[in-house]
Length: 324
Length: 274
Image (cartoon, rainbow over all chains, first blue to last red):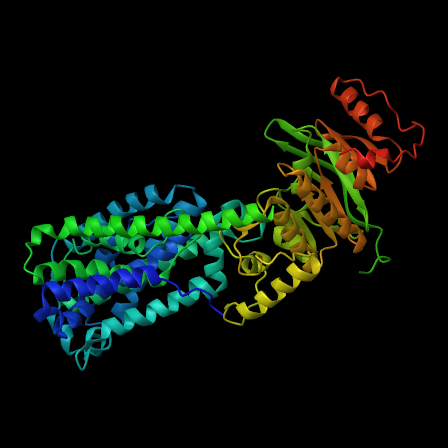
């Protein structure tokens, strides 16, 4: 059914990178521990990247998710610390993300603010609100380790961190939503050409609002995993995620122009980003190099994707020419 | 296709439309009979697009009545989705297909075959898309199938896909908004054949076109618009292409001279004008 397996280039890049690191630090990268450590650090980034893939597929962008990580993390920690809620705290956190997403959606779809501007503004706003209501404090929630919610979301099955399974399950679900669900198709058409989307009867405004709510909820889930893993909330948590989550999506090969997106690409993109830092440090290269190398890999991947796209476009152009 | 139960697929009565102080349509009466091809002509800004948009539910008029298959429809209940339900399809010049999406998505978008959870039955959609491509539109070139993205199609093929889609969903009325603009001559021929296919399959069509030779050749009736009003209705065979051209030029110079009393010309040489 699927004529071309999705994400072959990015999987190749990923495997090459693993080989390079095995060459540089065999004692680390031939053991299992480093990979288990990736499986705890990468899932929050990966989950953000999955949501962002949908947003970018629609030709939009979301810059506000770092504040969802803070806001929803706060709701979760606050409800646990104050009322000893666990599952309800989880739902509260998701609801917080949904609220932020809904506000974004309304600003973008109904009021017509471009998403880059609207979400830049809401990123400041919700980040600020979180600082205000948390009083700038951090919350230690070490006691949550004995609760079921901790086991279910970030416990261990053998050596495997459970959050990795959640991330994998979410990736599979998102793949089906994007590629096999009506909603995903609407997203792709909106990103492809919004006028076409309207003409074929897609309710563009409603789908956009749904999209940003989805992104908010997904970011909130990421926030809960992060907060649980750290057993701690601090009001600037999430600030480091903005660029790496976006980078994961673009390294994976999703087009900034919308209408084309790959969940598989974002999946491996997140692992590539997550691996470079740990890999470099383990290889004995100074930590200062991390960002420079990320930049290089990023550029390399994007150029690679562009080449592939152009080769395809040229191929089909030639075909059209021959036929005409 | 039941032909006897109604006289007009669509009828607009005394439709007005203003955008602020600008009057786009004034007192327009427009109807399309079943299996009738109506050519809609007029200059840019004459109100053709506004009329089409109102007829297909994209915009609402300031006042006027709408009858679909001789039954009055309330504007409040009318939308693009409702028009689809009533089997009206519009093929816009460049806004009908998602470039980067495969044809099977383009055929069904907005009306996907899904299960209860909204997941698409990809296999069935592809099978039907391939069937339409091969049997209805008559694409036999090896390169094109349901998985091809729209970007590999030529301009004429794109119009064909959009028209084929409309026919698959059993449209009674297909609106074509300048389908031959910016097409090579060989491609234009293909599109005109598609329009003939619409007529042959018993459907009605509103055909907006700049090229007079094309509309003159294909239409059962020509409707001429100027500055927001319908200024002439010309049944097939009443004017030759030359007379039509002169009529429209005179119209622009603000002296419409020809009344529909022109000699009934059976002159068909216009058909080969392009």
